[in-house]
Image 1 (cartoon, chains in turn green, orange):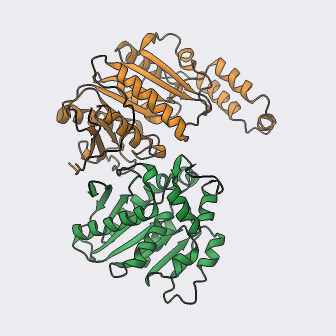
Image 2 (cartoon, chains in turn brown, purple):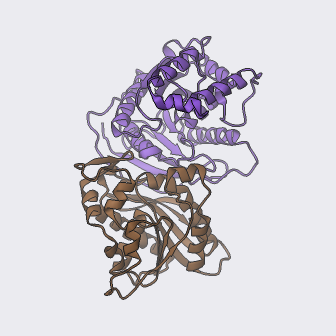
Image 3 (cartoon, each protein chain N blue to C red):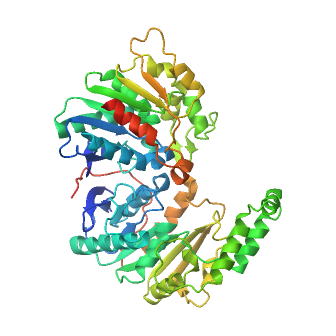
Length: 246
Length: 305
């Protein structure tokens, strides 16, 4: 395990690199994309465990905090979607530099999945696979789940975190078609919670040439506090990710 | 004062397995005393609920303090210990090793420990045996219940129909707490260190720890919220330990209506203001004062050491 800061002087990011376990056969790289807000806090432990399992399976992994989140520089009010995407792109470059590998797998949970899908659609050559774990595909649905008042004037406070006007505006325009219209050809979408938006997600636009593999698994949701305090880990999801990537 | 700060990552402890972030002012010597060490709250990693410990670290660094936040073994990014220690002994051993590192590698001989909930309990239990700890910021630490606690609790809920329903169907938190108090109160509590923080408030060891800390001249800022089943009024700590003379070594703050993890940004802002002002007041010789306004300058220095 190597914790470190990377990025630019103006946009310092905190990451933890886990090298592939010694003696593992494959040499692949994966970046884990965290959720946002309280979902990030609750899911941190499970994504660390996933990183360790990926390491055992031969992946070099990088987990990192977006600017304005976790241990990275910046304030929560600095968080906006283009910045989140830029941070993931910086992480891709960083991991490529560390490992010398030209391709990387992106694994994103909740809003991290949304960010990963967006970046993967633009960087197809660099991304060899994409795993979206309960990605956020509807801004209105997401805000409702967070308990946010969608009609409130920004900046609003959601579970102790400020939701900036920029992020709120971006969420307002988010819809399932954005995820499926230009989907990475090697995409697995794992759903543990059936929402209205997922119905749309499972019916990609006819124009879409690449359709993601979408699966429903009845498993725990580690981004929720109750799940962290009282539930077991999402064993099915983690195992499915490992099997699919193999 | 130059408000620019820097943050560096370290792997600490005998096994170099404790992930820690040191935040400090670029304008202040790295061995400045006292340093501030922030402990985990429950199983939440070092950034704290709502990222409050990152914000607090940076605010303290901007007024000249070196601040270390780290993950205890088995929490966040730190590896669990393997030598079979109890959870409490493991955590206290981690704190000891981190303070040893600060002293040996950074020349820091005085430390302020900050903790919320379990972090506060870890802080008080470690401090009474470590002369390097000169001050404590304890947020919602474990303290025994008192007669006034029960009276206040009942008074607060007497007008709620739901409270009577809960009692009637046997789901009242108060009744369960009261039963636990009776059961534990009848036990002979050992003065040895317990193996976990569970039911810590029933242990004489807790009272002894507070007594030792006060006798050692440690200053305490105790901040309580009104959102737990553990305290309902500001002076409960004094009533719970009537034979400890806290004197001016204890400053009490009570956040009525605030939840246990300070979810509201306004509550956190008020909390930070109190903590910063109190820490600045600890040593009259310190040339540190709360900044008039907060900047966001973070120098590029980094690396895992």
